[in-house]
Length: 267
Image (cartoon, rainbow, N blue to C red; front, top):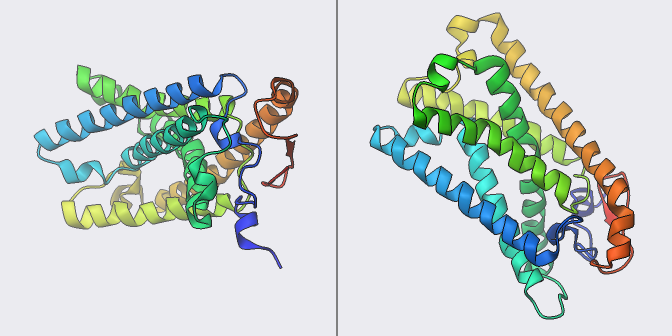
């Protein structure tokens, strides 16, 4: 019988290799500073966007867009990971960090948050620039240009920063199911928005104009989410393989790291 939490990436002991709070490229304190700096930047960007949306009289519509929800995920990730990394990096002796002692469910949510942050911004990048891009509206004003660059380009850059420069292990395969479930649940948000606020968050979700193509878009994005997950996962597998030697030489982690290509970690 498959044990649920290990299959979801929550091993016991949890993160003995300290991969969630270390980077192969940066010392722990520098990495903590970078994560917290990005946490502040993403939070300020989100608050400015919410404030300007509220000024225009549509604050509730902000939370109806998948783009904005995924950006909030980035904000949450950098604050959560930044705080945990800081508590590890600035602790005398560096013997661990609080998340390791928290309930398993919270550890699972932390790992799942990373999976969504690694995948959803890439989906946003692809969908926006391949399907929704409209230069007349995207670059119409200074604010619209800043907004589009922040939530449709920089978001993917920040996600890839964590994928490439952290020591985080490959996402468990079961997380792909949650990625697809998240995309499916967003459809509910989109159509609730149409019923309650009178507009479609994304034009390709309008059955009146898209007709038969609507099903193709929905299925295509679902399949695309799986493909992006697989791509990101194997980028991480490659990064782990390329940096294993450096991690062992620096001695910044506790014990020898053995990464296995089944979504888990073993000390």
